Amino acid sequence: MTAPVQLSQRLRAIKLYKELHRLGRDYPDPQWFAKRLRGAYEKNASLTDPTAIEKQLALGEHVKKEVLTLISLKKFRHLRRSYYPDDPAR
Image (tube, rainbow, N blue to C red; front, top):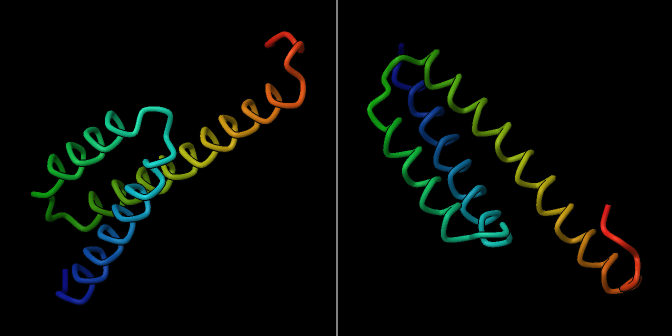
């Protein structure tokens, strides 16, 4: 493909990495998440096919949504335990 397409994919990948890295700070196990994130990016650093790169970017966006959901659930459970300490966990 042309260079501008690859450049825009590169910028999107960097932006996604930064977003995931910031989200990882609130993940239940931040060190584990950071290690897995870096490993995934290093594994895919050699990709050159634009469709394969797009596929990995889409997967990264999906992971971002899943992490946001997990963090929200963690916060909800913390608040529930704070306000209702005798409520049994379901």
